[in-house]
Amino acid sequence: MTLKVRHYSYPIIFLFELKTTKQKSLPFANINQYQIDTLFLHNKQSGIIAGFVINFRSHDYQTFFVPAEKVHYYYYHADRNSFPIEWIQQNGINLPATLIRTRYRFDLSPILGDCAI
Image (cartoon, rainbow, N blue to C red; front, side, top):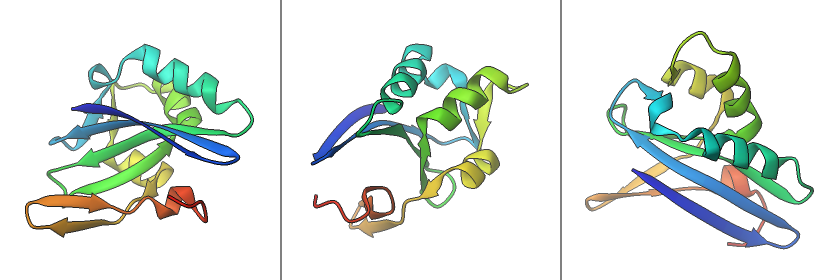
């Protein structure tokens, strides 16, 4: 599953590409190279924070935000074809999740900080 999210809170715009997997890693095949390159380029712009929100459904719904520059570097320099959960845990920001009936709600405050939603 993939979903694009944009959030604007003056003077910053947040660009997220959302990915989810049932595996212990996120295969490169689940992310288009264009998405990695585009978010990486946008992230270099002043006032833009871009990255990937990655959800591991089989691991207690662990969800992380990984900045675009880290994903970009790993994608082009790794000796494997996936992002392992251990790498994402080390390089990402954990996003707490709350189960509400049958769906989860994710707390983006670790990314957004003091910006009003």
